[in-house]
Image (cartoon, rainbow, N blue to C red; front, side, top):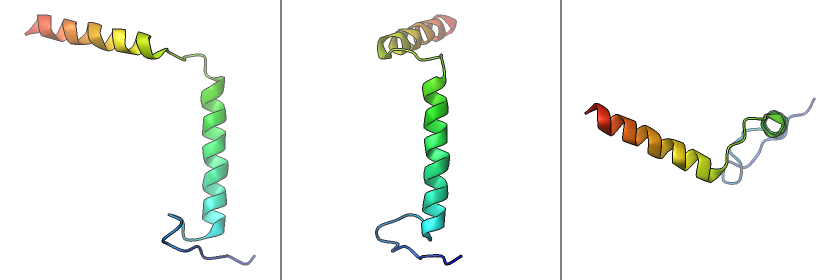
Length: 60
């Protein structure tokens, strides 16, 4: 198998094979994340953080 070197100014990978392997891995992780049922809205996350800050203030 012939390995093609990539230009360091354009790619963070040394070879096309490394870039392709990363792309496959990344797409798999995104697909797993989209299947996850633990999605939280932005507002819900901000509210939880607000509650945690308030709890920590009460401990001091």
